[in-house]
Image 1 (tube, one colour):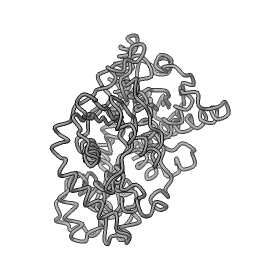
Image 2 (cartoon, one colour):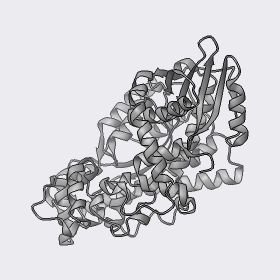
Image 3 (cartoon, helix red, strand yellow):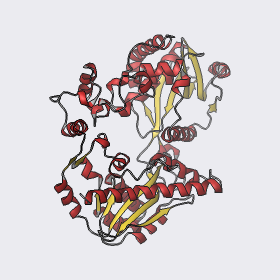
Length: 495
């Protein structure tokens, strides 16, 4: 903590005190896990958005040093008249922060600070305390902050030609909301400083024991060794049932086998617990048969791969609208035939939409059910395609009318298996029902990685050898997604 507790340390502390302690005192453990493709993507997206947002301030000056030189350069600038600084550095009373955009008005002698966020809206829970930390720190310097902004993306903006930055971004004045929480954040900062200044590891569990699995901190397994890998934290939507989770944890109940039979759970949660305890699945065979009997041949198993571009790259896109760049299709002509595979992957640097649509229209005939996993996503992609390409409107509407979501069988609790662990994603269902199929041996194992690898092709960052490797890996991954759907359908049919 050479310059004090950073804004990032404080934000981590707000989520989990002990996680922040490890970040500060044992970074070799905290950062020991390899950063995920998803986390890398968030960082890259944040950097891209920040670079674009800075263009709103053509006279802005970037301070590149975060150390002593940066602190001194910031102090020197504070003596000047009007200015706009990017990444001005402040350190005082044990706290440290770099301000995304700092503007000085020489007439009033006051300052405006703006935080650039790669989101489509201001997140009250996260963005306001982030800014309050900065304002408290600047007030420690004796600076008067007259306005506080969040600069975020405008989800209503649709690109048409060159980017129009004043329309792409929203500069939202959050001064009143931030000033209102300044005293609270000031107290939290002091508490964080005291907690994180302790050399000895704080005793006990971390704050995340009262959160569902998806919201656990990076050090959860290291800190809470008494909690098994599959625990009450994995019960479906238990994180949204905070009172239930608190009651279980405070009663020392960590495993599903220890949950009292009269403990209040939703039907979905109770089914998950019951199948785990009895060690066998619950299968509503007749209802599954009814569902599958409504399907019309040929059956098309369809899956898209997409890239969520924060800064719209092509005309017709808004911030974070998905760019569909690939699909896989397994086609089953009759109940006893073998599936035929067709696919499409865009390897160019423009908008894939026209060529993807043309390939899709070629591969999907006018009759037959179209099976997907999570129809909200696939139907959304189809609607966006129709919006960007009026010629595609009728075809995509027809495709959407024929879609059946195979995941619905599992969401409707017609098939509940202890191996699913309360989840209905294909990555959870497949290993249980069709264990001979696996993503483990693939170089691309999930959609986030597929998205980022394709983006290397689309932005000309991959040389020819890497490009061909990515193309091969993407085709293997997406093909397995649709073959997995076929294999799961076949397992259900064979019931």
